[in-house]
Image (cartoon, rainbow, N blue to C red; front, side, top):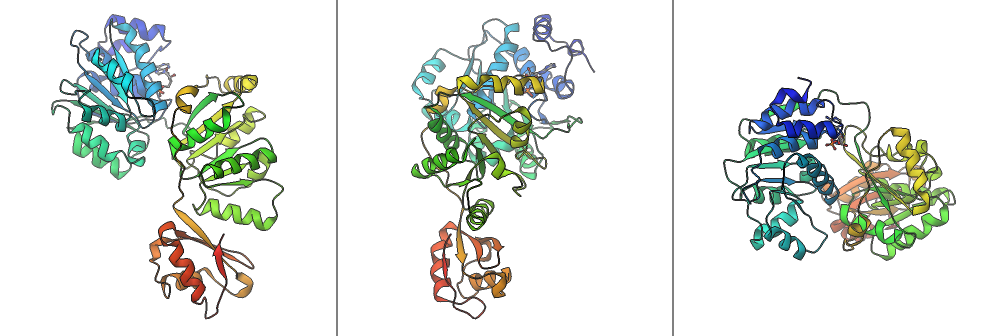
Amino acid sequence: MSSFNDFGLSSAMRANLEQLGFAKPTEIQAKALAPGLAGKDVIAMAKTGSGKTAAFGVSLIERLNPRLFAVQSLILCPTRELADQVAKALRELARARENVKILTLCGGVSIGPQIGSLSHGAHIVVGTPGRVQDHLRKGTLSLARLKTVVLDEADRMLDMGFQDAMEDILSQTPGSRQTMMFSATWPASIRELSKQYQKDPVDVRAETAGGNPDIEELFYEVSPRQKADAIVALLSERQPGSCIVFCATKQQCDEMAEDLVNRGFSALALHGDLEQRDRDSVLVRFGNQSCSILVATDVAARGLDIKSLPFVINAEPARDPEVHTHRIGRTGRAGEQGHAVTFCVPSQGHKISRIESERGRSAVWGDTELLLAVPVKPVVPAMRTLCIAGGRKDKIRPGDVLGALTGEAGIPGKAVGKIDLFDHQCFVAVEKSQADTALSRLESGKVKGRKIRVRYA
Ligand code: AMP
């Protein structure tokens, strides 16, 4: 099927799609629309950019009864940005129908106004799991008349620890509901979720995977004075396990890293002025997950051997689109979803325009005020790094260090992370909760039969 005329859509919807410039269905739409409109459960493997929002949005809106003043569709999204994007797309699609009310319910903003809006009635709710749960608990949201629930970016919601929240929400919906699940990846946890909450789902996959890495990109315009707060808010909200923040100059890197550390984050600066030894230590700590944020210049980040990062932030837009692509290409590798956020001050708008024209699509802008309202929550790394004053030249091997930790010192093997060996020193990552014990036991014990100096890196 390759035409929007093939699905029995209302003429108003077809006219609206035409007006939106949707000449023909994308692959995921062509495959998901028919089962969606028929009220069947759908599990779809689809990425951002595939047209997935309209793939579920068109059928939601077509199946809606605007005269019934109750929440008939619920779309759960992992982040507020995605929820805002989805709500915006749905509002455009809903122009085909009169009086369809769409509400977003996301955390990070005060709940009062949301309660007010809910009391006026809504047909479609788009929200993040935590806040939707809050409303259910308060009794300000009822899902008793729900027809369809959509789990958008279900894999990311699982990654972000929303499984219990999703299950709690689903348990408060009618058993007769239609459940649509969209996910960029296909791990066992997703298949399990589908098995538990879907009935005979139609399995839909877009074959055209596309050669481009899967990167969700967002831009924020900030004033120079807002920038540091905005970056802190973003990190607080996203809680990335690892993240590079790109700055334009060495001085900016130092200032940014210092500011982040002062606010309780674990951050290190990487730039050309560092001694080799310090550079090694910075890269080791970032690579072994005992520092979550690396603040770097382009030059310093060149040749960084870090496979894939979940998150890249541009504190400054890159000098040109090519450098931009290179920076954000550090995330979203190996089939994983990447995330990149770029901040610019008003005078840098032209740099973003150049990125847009280079790619032939427009930038998605986040709401700076909403972002700045996110409370500060430092990202806490999982590990701490011990530095052992002995290395290759002292005939120490990684096995010796692991042996000393798990043997005499009694640290469980799974609490020991990456071991990086250099000529005269060795770094070992240990789970935070075990780090003090590991340090004191190594100090009083021996590595390879010898007393050895140990300290925190
Ligand atoms: P999504 O994957 O839902 O984030 O959609 C990516 C972009 O594709 C959005 O800007 C949509 O407006 C656009 N889009 C969705 N469906 C179509 C279509 N059938 N034809 C052209 N553009 C589309």
